[in-house]
Length: 391
Image (cartoon, rainbow, N blue to C red; front, side, top):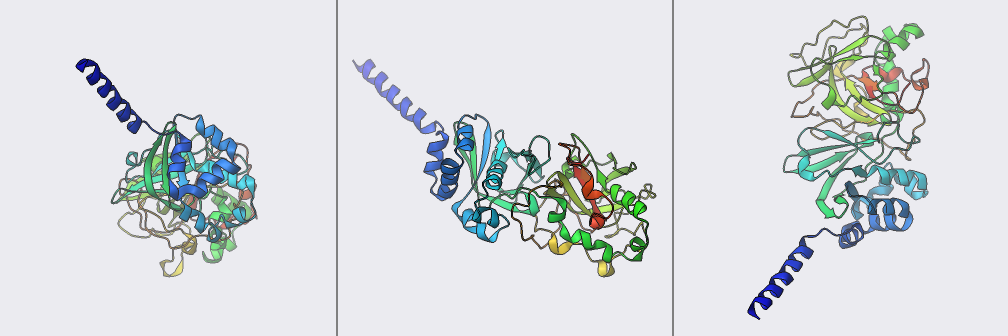
């Protein structure tokens, strides 16, 4: 009798322990979090197909915007889409908040990691495998996710387990990356301040220089974490670009990357402190000086001004990026963040200088027209795009 009683008690305690430790299903988890009721309602009541798909997953990470994040929408770049109930855009936004695989908060470190999302609709992205989200862990174990327009979202509560994966509650919406022009509109004004050299340059030569700042790739997107010392990349112009890491900075040829990993609809954008010249590929960087000597005479900026700085987003301790596409949705974007700051190339490698270069990849046939002469891409000088989406 005593043996039976002990067995029943132990079995009862084991059942309680198992019930307490077992993860909830997605519905129970969402309903248990009172600070994401807006997200729960949007997902379950208006986009039930996404919700139903999530319910069948067993390896997924959901970045759930808090109620406070919803309160910020009218003042954000996503405001018009939500105000006008643009369902296709909102659907793309929700898909961008879902990451395949389990990505626990502690799996991130001080180096940016870029993870594909469920956003693969060619109307909004041309990155093979799904548009990327940047993730990094800052001091104090604070996790930050970066998205289009240099937007950043901080994890308020992480590692909430359910039967199909985990949920991180974030304080702001992720913004799906948009095209190059909307990401860095001030770039198109760069010719006006670079001097008379480019004004007098034949259009064909200007086009070649622009193409030297673009790298196409079907499988490779040049996030800073992929730009290893000694790497050689083939530009769209045909000439090679050499990557150097020295004095805590990354260089493309002799130009220093001063703002990296700006996500665009079909790749990644890095801003440089110098214009690249395909006729001067053997020029080496001089890491000891903060701004590299101009390769093309007449392109210097007065007062050591960082080009397009007014449009650079406040960034975290590493890069955030995206890829440009022709015809990608603007997601109702009307404003662009400001306040450029120094960033770090993973592992604490910081950047200190100014201009840019670009890398794009081939995916889903976007075409070349945004880089055609006279298309308003003159401001690409000093920028390099490394990504996917251009033929």
